[in-house]
Length: 337
Image 1: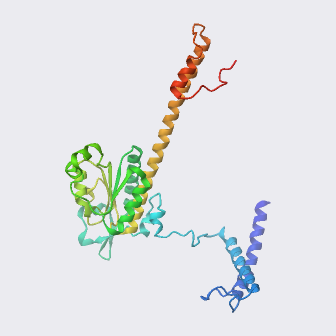
Image 2: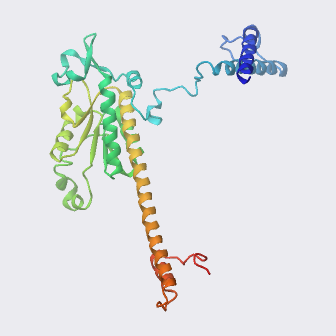
Image 3: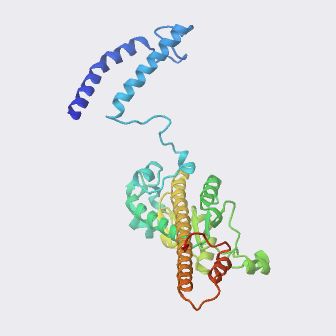
C-alpha cells in the first residue's frame, strides 16, 4: 500500500508540474538581467516583493519534486578546478585526471623511447598518455607514502616552478611535522655534501635526509634525483612523454606541465600521508592501552595473592606498589569485604 500511495503522490505532483511551470513562465521574467522582477516590472512595493517570494517558493518546489529523479547538482556543490588544492580527491580516477589534462603529452618528435609502454597513441602530432597505466601507478605511490608516514618517515615535496609553490606547500602542510617542501630551487650538495652545507655539527645532530622525495617537475631537478640515488632515497615523480621513466624509482606517467594535474597528484599523495599518520596514532593508542591493561591485570593478580596468603604481614604492600607504578591511589571498592 505504501508503494501505491507513493506512486499516486508522484502522479499528482507530475500533473501539477506543467500548470506550475506555465504559471511561472508567464509571471516571472527569468531572462531579465536588471534584477528580480514580477511580470513586466521591477518590484517596488511590499505586494510585488511578496509575489516574487511566492514565485521563488514555487520554483523551489518544482526543483524539489524532480530532485529525487535526476541530478541535484547546484552551484554551491559543483566541483571546480580551483578546489583541487583546498579540497583534493582522495582516490585516483581516470575521469578526474582526464579533466585535468593529465593525458596530454609532448610532440611525438620529443617522445622518449622508454616511455612507449605508457603511451596510448598519437593525436595531432602529440603523444596521448594512457591513463589506465597512470591510475594504478598513482595508487602504488599513494600506498608507499602511506607506509612511510606510518613508520614516522620524513616526506619531501619538490616543485620549483612558480605555479607549483602553493601546491607543494599545501601538500606538505597536510602531513604535518613529517612533511617538508622545496619551492625555490634545489641546492646541489644538500644530500651528498650536507656536512659542508649545514656545518658538521648540524649535519650530525639533525636528520637532514628525507625518507621519501616527491618531485612534481623532475626534469628541472635532475640533480636532486641523482643525489637521492646516491643516498638510496626513494623518489616519486610525474613523468611526461619526453622523460625516461627510469629516472625515478616510482614513476607516475602524466602531464608535468599542467598545474591541475600536479594538484590532483600532490593532493592524493598528501592525503595518503595523512592517513598514514592517523593509522600510526591509532596503533600507538592501541599499544598503550594493551600495556596498561597488562599492568593492571598483573597488579590485581598480585593483590589477590596477597590477600589470600596468610604469611604476608604487610597489608598495604600492593597499595604502595600501585601508587609507585601508576602515580595514583588504589581505587576503593575493588576488594572490599
